[in-house]
Length: 273
Image (cartoon, rainbow, N blue to C red):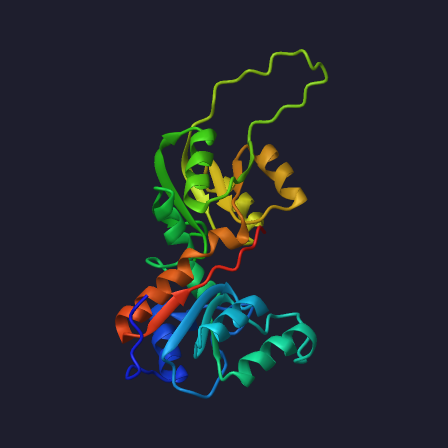
């Protein structure tokens, strides 16, 4: 976090323009608007960053006397009610009453090749990104990475250490045996080609298998994901939606602090999902 300076300010519009350009936001067809979502109407000196613009993060920003909140998960998602009522109304009312701007970046913050969620997670896990999970994408939101051959147990330990939580591992080696006494011993599978897409991208497991990956890492898991992993023969690691998407917004905050000399603080609102 940079030292707070009463003389260092930026408008919400100027900050958004910088982030739009840095993240190539206009290149994405997203599920929610990227950039400035709520204009607090005052110059920005102090910024709080977080994964999701929940009420707890807003309350923390108010306590920090922040002028803006920057998140990965903001508001106004496709398919949700358009009215500003209920929980969304209460959140936005607090922002407006305290003059706090809300700036959010979804897919652009997943895909950025340097500070994106995928890039930062790969870095944390010692993986080297080599190509796109979907080769036709110019700004891929999923990637393929390589690593020295390792067991699923070893990768589980690395993930646990990096994210502070044990991932749910579904082995791609599964065989139903009616005879419980039958020998199920098999040579351990070594993982070296890893598909990766943070958050709620569990259904990309089929693409990861089609691209020849030994394993696939994402955040969430659905009931169907277990069967997909077993039938496709690809190991799956569900590492937590929130846990896999903390690093990108932190990195963006660091860039902003360095670029503009603003006070930026990441606040982690715990979420086991």
